[in-house]
Length: 612
Ligand SMILES: Nc1ncnc2c1ncn2[C@@H]1O[C@H](COP(=O)(O)OP(=O)(O)OP(=O)(O)O)[C@@H](O)[C@H]1O
Image (cartoon, rainbow, N blue to C red):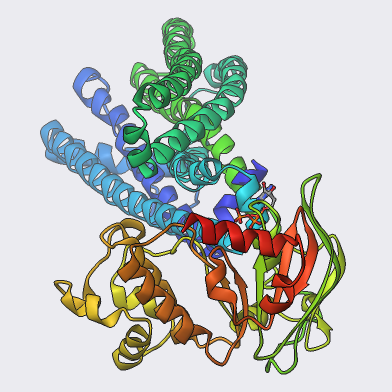
């Protein structure tokens, strides 16, 4: 229940929902009760035609009003009896019909309001839960997102939220039904304490048996959600990698992996369903058993010499009892979806409670101006237990260009990721303008950086929005950036120009076009520090030239750290670091490094020359 208490408070204004909801439910229950108790006079009129009503010597008046069942009952019977004597039984019957209709009308009006209130609250709560999940995912550090499976996070943010939403609907019955139960049970006690005592004795038996099933359901449900996450993952990977799947004729491979999870899901679901389906028939059988026993018990009271219960009251009791069974059944029936939702909500909260490891220090200051440069001082880093960078030292002064080269897997991208604090070093420190990067707020630190990655990261939105990327910019500024990035020409040739939507991850564009859009985005941001991870995928000569030209424009006047895969592009660099197995093995300008006999840089240059 702790989980649901947290879920219920998610919108932050629980009382503003609970107070009106409580009163609406109260009115609904009272009118519903009135509706059913109308049965007693109705049955009396129809079947007890020989019971004659005598006008009492002292009439009850509203001045004697006491808010208790006895007064209400006696007053109603007196007025009703007078009406029957004066106007006849048919008029009395008509009045009962009218009362029944009105009670039913009000019950339904309040039921409608109750539904609307609950539904509104559910929607806003779940919407706010969804937003929180998204915000949390946004706040998590890159290390967490790559280490835990993407599909797992996807499942938690989609199917789990839906489960939670379903359960939420069931949850309000836990607020509504107790109100109904209290009102109905009080009436049952009033009509016959003896029979109600018996009901109280027996109801917990059914409660416990259904509770046991619910507990089992929760365990199975957790399992079910995990497998459903894996299924989603296979589907996602297959769709994203469809070109490779088809190209390698790997349909069988992905199908078998999908089938494995699919069968696992079927098995887990079967397990779950066999337990879930047991809850409903079990409560049905128990319900019928109770009614049977009650019929017998009530019958003996009615038929006994000193009957404390009239036949009409007994019938009304039975009808009211079936109405009590409804909320009891609803609660037990909802337990399964609540248990399922509880497991899902627990998984969502696990994600919400994951604190990012990389965050602002409490006394972090803002990096307002980038003045001097970046310096790595004895930096070492590793993913999990693997060492990737060992004792890296270098200085990159403002306005200069530093290039990283070396064999694949040497740690170049990892090194670049440390500057915007996508990861923090294990030891040593990185300084900007003489202060540890950890002393600055993340947002101010990153506001000085532009990052162009190997893969162009684009979103399914317009070209304009992909370049502006959330900043308030005019079309002129976006156009200017696109022109510098050699992108304007192709953009205006698209059907809707800057308003053309570029498809999922930019699927409607060529590789070179995508790269030029990413470059335009970086140009628009106008960062002091540029981190450039050169694309490895080869473009045709024409496109390559346009991209290279755009990169030259982008680098102008900035502090640049470039991860170079084509050595021809970095001959102008102020400094080149050759990185192998996480260490700097050579350092200098192009001319310096070419002069090193048997040096790695020289070898790499020669290899690239040779392969041209
Ligand atoms: N998220 C990660 N979790 C664990 N290991 C990782 C992760 N990212 C990279 N690695 C490992 O760290 C090492 C360095 O990788 P990195 O991407 O920095 O190399 P690189 O020099 O940039 O390679 P390339 O030139 O091929 O891009 C590699 O051995 C790689 O397997």
